[in-house]
Length: 289
Ligand code: KIV
Image (cartoon, rainbow, N blue to C red):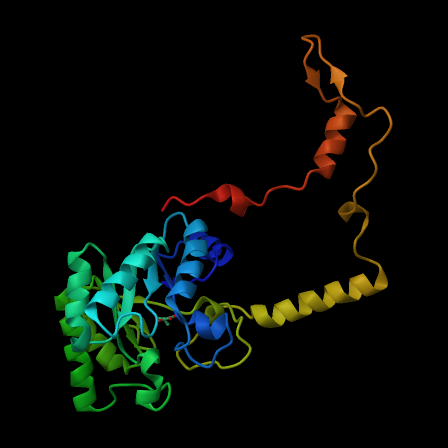
């Protein structure tokens, strides 16, 4: 599983055969440049979810429920989850929390909305945790996180994200609940893994948390590619003739066929092809969700 926030990334990740994409509230940090996920709104998740849905053919799409969209009342939570499915087009929703949100999860599932749980390090509680810190390092904390995972799975969550806990606890939770665990900084024994797509591609030039493996360095490569563009524009090497449109040549007008229908002559067809700006694949792609 990876995070995705727009149609192009969704197409890339979908073609790479990921099983699931999360329209995460991490977009507050990687897309909006905020210091936490707290400012992200339901409208913003819906906006990004619609783009991800348009770029996806096969992966399951999960919408993150942002801070304050599900904590204040059951009614508000059900409304917000319903909007994410109805307006955002996601197939399930994810909520951070444990025993205290078990009833909310139960009611969402009963109204037909599949739910993903999220326990351990919960970024929406960054201030209560005193920062983005590994959770469950001592016995009582670990037991409490395990209780939370059991509660959300018994409430009907079909999958549980386990974030920022010792590998032993990730393994214990995985053995103790009946639904798949998806780890992020929770060790190799979780049933699956999730990474923020910008982290795995090396698109973030700031923090590199211990649990992240960068499979490329696209930020650095983007800087180099853009430098090359800037230099070619300044020197006049770009645009080259192959990037440049010409005038229509004399004699390239349409000819009439033997059936009387108008068909372009060969030179006219070539000139037309040269001048047509293709619709990107993304426009022609279309969602199947
Ligand atoms: O918002 C997010 O990206 C997440 C994942 C890191 C699990 O919640």
